[in-house]
Amino acid sequence: MSLQNLKPIEWKFSERAEQLQSSAIREILKVTMRPEVISFAGGLPSPETFPVDRMRAAFDKVLAENGKTALQYGTTDGYAPLREFIAKSLSTQDCTITADQIMMVSGSQQGLDLLAKVLVDEGSKILVETPSYLGALQAFSVYRPEFVSVEMDNDGVVPASVAAKGEGAKLFYALPNFQNPTGRTLSVERRKELVETCARMGIPLIEDNPYGDLCYSGEPLPKLLNMNPNGVIYLGSFSKILTPGIRLGYMVAPVPLIRKLEQAKQATDLHTSTLTQMAVYEVIKDGFLDQHIPSIRRFYSAQCDVMLAAMTKHFPEGVTWTRPLGGMFIWATLPKHIHSKDLLADAIANNVAFVPGGPFYANEAETNTFRLSFVTVSPEKINEGIEKIGNLIKARM
Ligand code: PMP
Image (cartoon, rainbow, N blue to C red):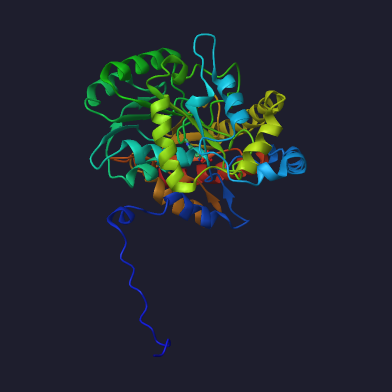
């Protein structure tokens, strides 16, 4: 029998896999890899903020002193000293979080997938913000829920809209701080109202908070988690306060749910890298983040100011945008007749890029919106890029 000329396989994907699509953003990012393009499209943190030397020293130290443990399989819930450190940092005077409520994950993105895996059936109703984080919509979509879009304004989600649309919902997916994509923040009054509304309706809240520490002034706002630890599932991440390449995040939930999530994670990847968890613990255990986070805040706040000033100078009347109190994103809204996808085509031809708003909507999209990220581009290039976009908008007015 000859092994030449074997018939190639015709791949027949599962129905679930047929739901998977490449993120619109990843496609745009391919274009923006060209060095001549000024890109406000990426959701990447600035590499200027990565504490490379500290990370290297921590990996060295862990390997030198504890190499055999660091290179061994670990438990699914994660490295205990790190979980204890996180539990302490999340606890407030009125709300104690314990290490057994925490599971480490390989990036909070994994947490979104695991949550959908253990809580969402086909047709389950999931409430999402309008717009919402594209990566969460992607993670949930695989499990074929029914997305219900909840109203938002400049103070974040409108709790009355949750009450009106939320009957029978399985989950509410919330981004209270410096939301991706809009940069909006949920006001303190609304936090209480939202937590109360969801508790009354029996809807668990997912609080996804990768940007919460990156407030430009004052202290981070109170977490939904601390307002109702029995009704909130919290997702935290080291991606925006240390580095995203280490893929380290955590989830906080009531213990019975954590046990179920642990079973799901076992099936996915057994556990998150032991070496990485030990090295990160080594980096943060003596308070490094207390100086590091303020330096990121100052840097991002200055970048944000540059972009806002450039927009005020170069964008024509009729365009509006958010003024974020933290995080990495500004959300702009064009006059209704201009599609941001068309503007993007003009922009790419002029070597500047952003992300059109469409993919961030679970249901009907507002086609005249777009997201700008201001953290990875120099102030000079921010001015140049925003001036170009402003001129392209004027040409379409
Ligand atoms: N949630 C939101 C809102 C995000 O913006 C991101 C990263 N872009 C994630 C979750 C995933 O972060 P991680 O790197 O922790 O997986």
